[in-house]
Length: 268
Image (cartoon, rainbow, N blue to C red; front, side, top):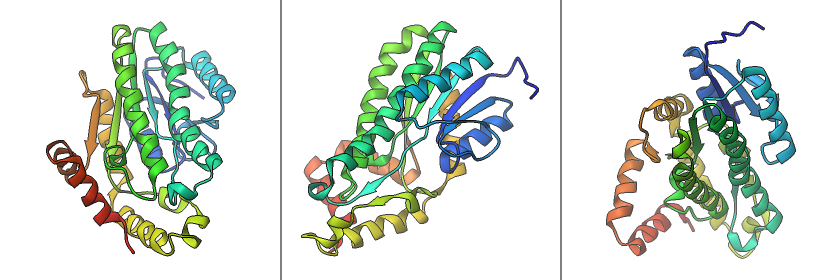
């Protein structure tokens, strides 16, 4: 494979589909060298099979990239998945799996990228969060919590890494039409137990909204634009209506905001 030695290198996790794939393809079109760290291949980025929740696998992947490219200018953490169900009836192992991929996977990749970026004068880390980080979604409590944790991690790391020329950004899209919906793991115990049909009806509403949501390409364009800004904001909300919701969250009493979220998403 012939490489352009002047091209910058980007790493995109979860670039086998959805927003990650769209972001990787957009960067490739701009002349970047792009690596895809995911369990499955997809698109035209250089694929390194990686489970982002496996620390040894992540370290090996970044060492390979460092050996091949010398440096990394951009990391976009897109790897993630969702689970649904009542928090009360969710097994601890399932909740931990949600955090292992969404949060700790982001952390592991960010640590490796930061190490390489510090040695090479700086870079940019963009973490995929969600509007659910602000509005905790009923029956997606652990997904919401993992995204809130990503926001906190991003804000803290941004301050920690600024002196090394590294900026950390979290982007919070609302509903996006991708394969994420079909891949969601559903807690059957919630749907068959004390909550009755409430869980299945509520999740069906969420999934309908997702399938009417923004395209992965639109979100990826916003992500890459934020990544390449000279002086980025630490948090970006993607989607006009979600920007309005985020503003209302700041202005309205939290009791009212949470009640509105309940009316929108809890269906009996």
